[in-house]
Structures are given as structure tokens and as C-alpha cells.
Image (tube, rainbow, N blue to C red):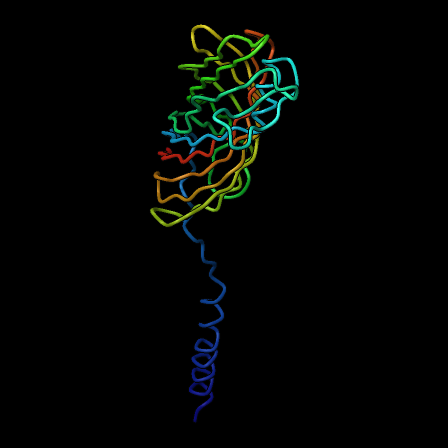
Length: 231
């Protein structure tokens, strides 16, 4: 073989060996999920009371109460002078809200600011006995809340399945026409999403405060399922 042919063969071999190295040096950039800035939700609430005997029953009668076992009423004062009957505490309610992500929501950690409107339970309580207060009614009350939360998201591009978790807290105003109040709350939860659509579950501990007929507080724990649309 001539010297020219030998050099040609060596260059061809080097080209074949170097080709995989050049291919492996190319970097792969996976598709990133679209950044979202706003989420709109419709909410279904199921609310439980917490420490109802103390908040608000004891505050309304002005003395300690205890559970009534095997009686036609629910509570009675320690001295037995007043009996208390909870005629109604509705569990189911509805609401809605808007969440804004000032820095966008894609994957990772971000800040979320939320404004929401939700139903409070309808409550009817009657009192009977010496020195009993008048019946207590909370009807048609709704809470307008604002809150801040930290979101941790792992979203997928397109309509792939993604998820997120969040925790935060806020304050609110309560309106029902006859008895207004204010509140503060803590909330946490998470959800799954596909593209712009999602489902979210949250648990809120809300401390609702009123001044009428006496200063009292009702602690509610709404468990909320939200249908969401984000863009």
C-alpha cells in the first residue's frame, strides 16, 4: 500500500472513532412546563367545629359547661342550671377563589397570594334555664379571606400529570348582615393537575371572632375540595 493510501485509511478510521464522541457531547434539553400566573377555583367545603363546648357555648353562657350524656340536649352548665341544645350546625358549603403567583408557578418553590369567598356554617343554638341567654343564630355568613402561602410544585409539560403542596395562612372578614366579625386561619394541602386543569384538597383551621351578643369565638375546620383552572 502506498503512503497516500495508508494516510487515507488512517483518517477514515479516526473519523469513525470520533463520530460517537461528537454525538455524545450533544446535550438534551427536556421540555419545560408552561409557567402559570393565575388559578381560579370553585370550592366544596365540609366543615367541622373544634372545641364547640368552649368556643362559643361557654362564652355565650358565661360559665363552664359539660357534655350531656343520654339527654335530649347537648350541653349543660356545671351547676345544671342551664341546658344547651345545638339545633343546627351545617357541614356543607361552597366558595371560590383566585390565586396569583407573582413569580410564576412552574416547578419548584414559589409564592402564592390568594383571595377567596366561602360559606360559614349555619348555626342555631338554644338555651333553657335560670339566667339562660337568648337563642344564638348565625345565618348566611360568608368569609372574605386573603392569604399567602408557599407552593412546592412538580408540574409536567403539556397535559402530563403533575402535583403540588402548599402551606400558609391569612386573615378575613365575616359578613352576614346582622353579625359581622373577623378571623385568622392556617391552611395546608396539595393537589394534582393535568395541563391547566386540577383538583386540590385543603384543610383550614379558622378562628372566627364576633362581638355580638357577647365577645365570642367559633373554631371551624373546613376540609375543602377545589376544582381549578390555571393559566
